[in-house]
Image 1 (cartoon, one colour):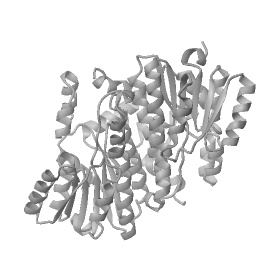
Image 2 (cartoon, helix red, strand yellow; image 1 turned 60 degrees about the vertical axis):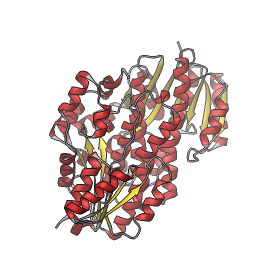
Image 3 (cartoon, chains in turn cyan, red; image 1 turned 30 degrees about the horizontal axis):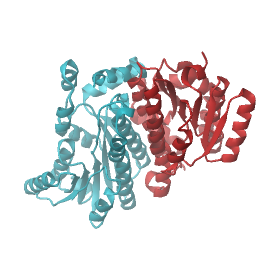
Image 4 (cartoon, one colour; image 1 turned 180 degrees about the vertical axis):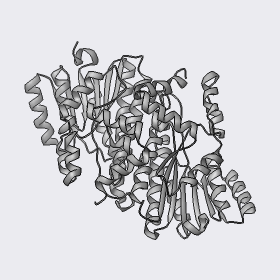
Length: 264
Length: 264
């Protein structure tokens, strides 16, 4: 039984343009699902949708939306209201570097909208549909910064932690139903966003040593869907988190993360 | 050097009416700080302020505010703008029980405002003041549900996780300054809110076994201020978290938390 037979005709990827979002879209299309691709860069999404339709013989729909706009979900929900929805993944994220109080409030508003508010609206909306039809799946994307916290990048870690904890709880709530929910926590993933934000020197090299491809992350997420509630991607990342939690204090973990960007 | 000499004349407690917030207000007043008490129940806050002024000989100010209202911070910041501020603690929280998608959207809006948005606005505002004067302290309050996640109470755990991770990061960012920031993660605390939400039977009894008084939590927070970034209150809670993280999977922890409320 492929994903389309199990969960439904359409899946929506919030933040589909590149990297992990693109890998999610390719994966569900390869298992027969048509894809709703949502993001800011309409032209790139149209290209991706066309390529997916040609490769996998599924439909695609592109919705241009800026997740930082508080009303952006209105048109997303309107555009998908007549589709047989069966999958959602929230991949979008936005961050800026710097101390909390040195970052302009407008940037904080954008971050909290992308990383928390729009996520919550989308998760709530599609969970309502999936629970009602007792069919569907959600995989949301978190980050190791959600576990460690992320000095000089505080909103990002906090938002990713919100996504992780909300998704874990909902995953447990629907475990005895036919709706499968999971959060996958990514370490370093080789995406355009990573490459443009990588710190220089030994810190950057350490980061790249554990880096995974988006495709490997997505594969691990689907391997665990319906079995696990919360997964840390990759053996290296799993071992790192376990070692930290067993052997180090929270303060040591936080300060270590802060050391990566403290010169910014 | 008492808290007033170290940090400044006034401290603000967001969510001061009872329990942990009240204990924070009493503590800083006992060390010479005047208190800004913020909450919904103006009459109770006036009573508390009067009692604090009589007992400790400090000033008090009461601000009636509903943290669920998105513009509630306007009048808080206006009312404190001419005070010599030196301390802030965000204690307020709000939650409802039930599955995510079964909870009306209006309740989610209230929860996200109280637990995330108003917190962020207050933290950002007072951190700006404290960083500029290079003097001040912040102690924010999180919960063990931030570490475990909290099925059937998902927004609460996720919001408390946001508070924990944001505060940890900012605590690291200002560690080399004269601003001290810390988050204290509480387990069961004997507050009116706990007593009214306690599950029945063995689950409730297990919860009460590890319960701490608000005063003990606040004392531990101040003992660690300027030394630790993130503290779990109480030896019992510290040991529990450590044992879970060293010996159990995230899924086991999440499902265990879900077992407390799965009959709701």
